[in-house]
Length: 231
Image 1 (cartoon, rainbow, N blue to C red):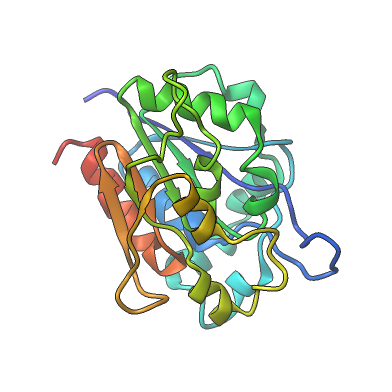
Image 2 (tube, rainbow, N blue to C red):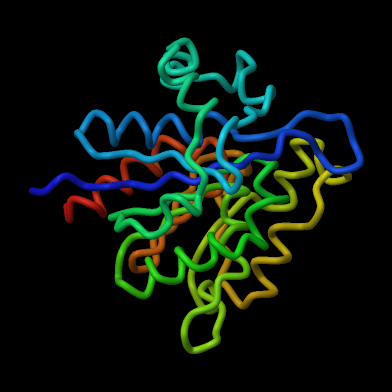
């Protein structure tokens, strides 16, 4: 099997708008897929809309949320250097990838949905029959992707994402720029939620894979690998 290539797209936004409250990438939503890919010898590119530094949400570094995989990478100088020097998305957008993955974190709500480069590469990837994945708030990067027929990519698809009740649990309802659950439904998608909030849920609809929340990170990595390797 030839070497598989993955593009992981992450946010550059580290603060909620009109607030000093820090946000950014939710670390585990990157580390679990990154770990699974490196373990199997995949080529992984980490990119962001602006390139350069990737802010990490401090909430994702707390004892309750920083799992062993995330802690291991967070303590590696080489990994931290990667986060400080992400590729600019426009510089790597024209390459071929077996998977494009939108990592989450509240920061993505600001720079993913309206990014034309994200929309273009997701459209091309999806219409080429290649895998597209997004987790938690990263699913917001799919909202405005339109296919060649003019329809929204997620219209009629069964997907998941961070829901409004989970936003309540997270205490971020008054901070976020929009309601992701409502936006997903407005696009005509079939939103599936975990029976118990803040538990793992991954939905697969053809070659579109979505995860609901940070607690879906490990399952997401397993399912992505299974999809990529045709198992």
